[in-house]
Length: 500
Image (tube, rainbow, N blue to C red; front, side, top):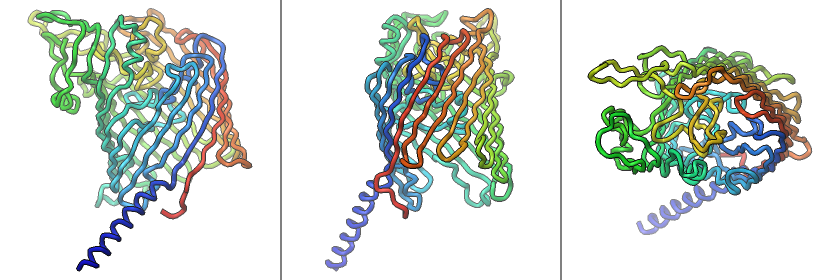
């Protein structure tokens, strides 16, 4: 019996050693050097935006970036999967000289993953390279550190013949832009510190491409800002009792629960109780058709700030519509995306809380991405949603506010790979803004944003890529500018295995 126990112990130790040793395999690494030079007061729009917050308004800048990552998918043949990553950058003419962009660890059992840390996450149903971005959770701002339980990929529901699949997550995290908010506002206007973050989403896919070319995906995502403390907070009209402009906000278990299930009230709600924190979200719907190497997708995303637009209290006039086409392999065009964004309605221009004199509640003037406590749906100046609602980073008055959230825009993205060595990408956006309901623009201002990008990956040096980009802004929505960007990158593997 003693020998059997010893043999069993040795087997367990050997198995554990093997599990630990595999964490040193299938590691990818990348190094890149980026230099931007331009003419104008700001950098071209698509040089700054939709880069996970690794952008700057400065027309001349530099960025040195290095990353190592092990994807959990490296253990695709195992029940237990482990991934991790570290991604850092040194910058010139950015808001920080050193940036910790990603630091995370993923622990996955079968389809369920626990993700810890800050990690760049792709768009849920849109194309990362060609889309203008999603409305609630996008690729515009720097990732937040969080604890996230998720189904990262669509999981096929058993006994449905492969026709039904689920995807979703629930997460809590924290903002890291205390210093940025304090310095940007100079401490003289509304700002917060130590705010917390909550996100949840669920998607259902109906379809089986192996048996039928058409599939339908729908779902909802909801986010919230809560906790922390706020400065220069204003009390609402008819607030009773004393009120201090500096308020410490709720961090207890109730606050976490009210982020999950909207409830409670804010410190400055006064006689008009709402819900605690800043809540927002999106409904998603996408139809895909795939056959013979062709894939066509049509999608719609409806953004909501509160219950008035979450359900059908008012018509859904504001939408992000998209059409996505992927072609069979050819030397000219790989993918095309067209999007139309409208955010001009926002439930209408009149808001009124029910009173004894006028008992009718009118829940309009949604004022997308702005909030009376948490300033704006942003992180370090970048919109956490769609970049076409111009980020507070562009403001010159020290206010963390979206001043152009009533917009209509047309956006197109194209990419192709004429050969194994050359690839290209084109983004063009035409946008008009009517400002906001509180601060309207009498006549709409226009913006035109262009990105032309060519990449060269020589066959002689596998992993090396040169990318040359040209960007230009025109119109009065952002300052006119033009510039060029050159990026040299190299990527490779450490201990890559062919068997897993």
